[in-house]
Length: 193
Image 1 (tube, rainbow, N blue to C red):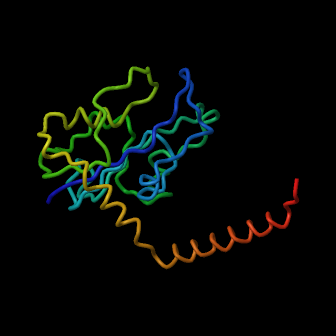
Image 2 (cartoon, one colour):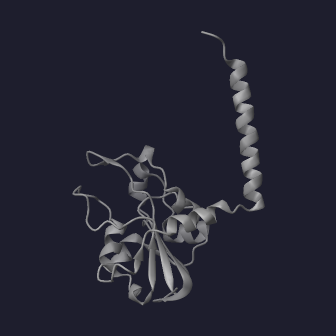
Image 3 (cartoon, helix red, strand yellow):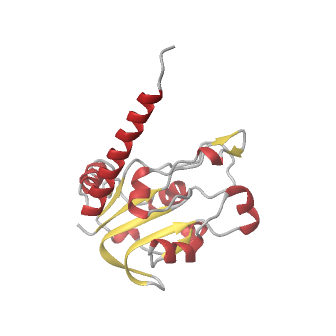
C-alpha cells in the first residue's frame, strides 16, 4: 500500500535536568538506516516517492538538530542540515524544530509503520529540546488507528538487516579474526592468582 515508515533516534538520558552526553548510544535501527549518531532526529521512508512541498518527489525525509557552535563546545559537533546532506547523502533534510509546520498530508497514506507506539505526551520532565515522537503523534492523532501499524515493521527491518553486502561480510570476518586474536593474546597474558 501507499505507506511510510517512521523512525526516531534514541533519546538522550537526562539525570536531574542534565543530559548525560558521554553515555549516548544511537538506536541501532536508526543508525543502520541513516548513519547518524545524533539524538533528536527522525526519518520518514516512503514506499513510493511523495511530493514534499518545496522539495519535489522524495523517497525519504530526515529531521535533524540545527547547528549551535556555542553549545557544541559542550555537546560535541553536530552535522546540521548541510552536513547531513553532504556526509550522509540525504537530499531532503529539515531542522527538527520545523516538524510542527511540516505540511505533508499523512492522511493520504494507507499505512504509517512504526517500530513502537508513539508517545502522546511528554513524561513530565521539562526538556530543552523538541520531542519529535510527541510532535509526530500530534500531527497524525486525527487519523484512525487502523492507519498506524506497529506490529510488522520490526520483522521487516530484521529481514532487511539480515541481508549483507560482500563488503559487510568481509568486515565481519575481519572483526571475528581480530576478536579471536585479542582473546588469544589475553589468554597468554593471564596468570593464576
